Image 1 (tube, rainbow, N blue to C red):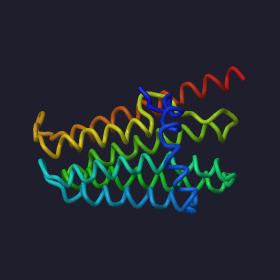
Image 2: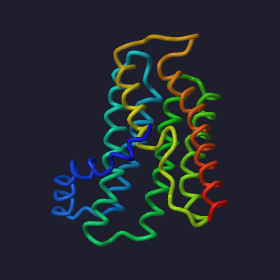
Image 3: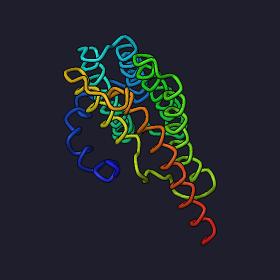
Image 4: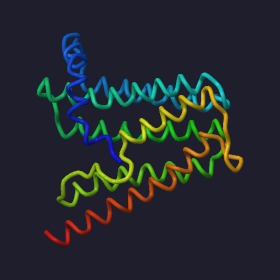
Length: 204
């Protein structure tokens, strides 16, 4: 389950936005910073949201924008020939901060901080294993059960629904269940990436 396999389709869809960004002189690093800003705003919205609150819908829109900008910065860098290792590093660092503030916001809004801790460590380990594979000589790993594009899509979908519906299961709201999902699937994805990277290293 990964949306990264549709990256080429996303690239085609965003070409008009890339053209506009280049035309007005936006830089890849500036877009990356703007993406972090949308994530921080989403985290704040989630922190103050209650079940059935339209703040969840605002957060969902901001998370969607974060995902769009996260793709756009790399496309602009490649189009303008300004892609670099330093820019890639900045992008990944800001993405991790974005992941943190979104999950923390979800945990704060529900008061489920233990679940938030489990979820954010799963998310961070998933991303770490993806880039660590590259650090030991393999290709960067994007696969697994849930990648970053999947996480953003799921967060946006669930919190968008939470703005209008307030079901609960075993005393957990939709957002609480979302944190459980990330806590479990995040660590499973990290283990999956670790396993495939280890196999690839042993076969090399």
